[in-house]
Length: 559
Image (cartoon, rainbow, N blue to C red; front, side, top):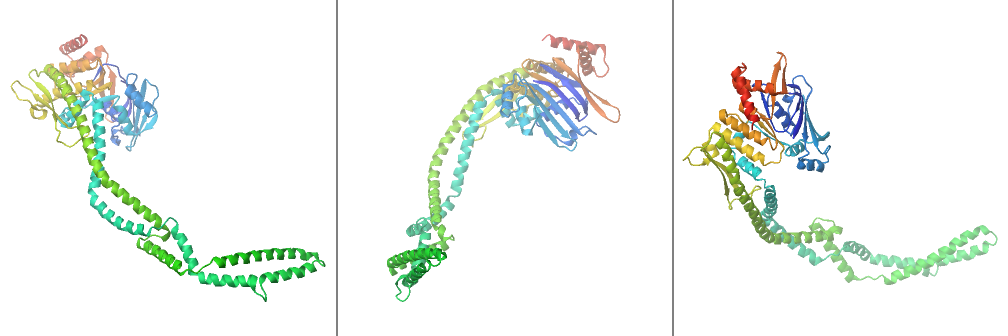
């Protein structure tokens, strides 16, 4: 429940600190005094949009701090723990700052948060019903929302929504495949031609690099053979002079001379190593020339395959060394296209199954709305009978259209039907009721829907407009009874409603012709009597008005 509200430089409020109690609290005051400012301030704490106009004239910033007791709100505690915003498990403090330029900051338990997080947390803390809420009730989507709120079948709604999302995702995939089917067919046909050609060539991995090496070798095989033979001859076989014999002769000469000069020894050693190297090189060169064959047929085959690889690479605009990988990519893409065609068949069957599952869940939701809707209508009817509409009848009509397209909230259309007089046929709410009747019916519906909600605090901002007399007393009793199970804060101008409250606050406005300030105070018993008398008779307090005020309070205290 809301325990404290602190407001600084917000609209016409300079400084305001209010403690709230359990039960029903009425907020009254003069017209234009700013009775709804506390409601606006709380809305800011729950994520309402901020603007520069909210900042008091001359101030740099506005500040609103709201404290809530959450010891009996497990959903709020769980949310805070999930986002690591928990402080004291029994309390949460929300702070909102708005600069004179219109920029705003939000905090939960001292931690900066986004506005959406304020809204997400706010749904567990309080609900605000504005003075135009009755008009909202005329909208079919709002009527559906109010019924579902009263039903409390969140698990059924979640199940329908989950199945709808699954179905929608599959439908998007299916329609995408169908829309692109001709494009895939054209692509598959092109790939088929390309792959057949590449399959016939069947280039192996890394084969092009090997072909390139062999092509170079075979292209110069005659030169390789001739030059190798000449080199072998010069190294080993030339009779007049070959490299090996020349080196060996030099070794013999220098070996004899090193006896006279030992500094020749390293040179002799190098020549010995050179002789060995030349001998081995000549041996290797002989083996090379013996195995080197000039094979015109092999040359022709390599030349043809090498040229074909280059041709295919140019045709497909890839590098020759990437031709193998390109072939594999085309084959994989072709297989994926084949899978898509098979997937269309499977998806069609899967869609039928998902659609059946969705409609089964939607039908369960429909039955829940029908069952609970009767109870909802009965209780609303009981309340409006007490509000001087004794002959009125109320019904919740739920139409289940199995032929309609799936939606996140099911296949139902919901509307409220009412008859305000005996013998009058029921019709839609917006076609039957007058403004005063709508106010009474709307208030009864809001209270009934909210009573099933787990929110601990409900705020009603002049929702009793258009109501007076005996009906106002019934409204006051209705709100007071609601205040026995949760915290109710009601901004009202009706003494019959204010008298039923467990607590009452008074809003007053002060002006020194330069600035205006709004103040809010808790009223004691005698102060309540005077305020109720003012609401009854105006600013001039008469003894009869005071007596009527005392009587109103006595009646409320006796119930």
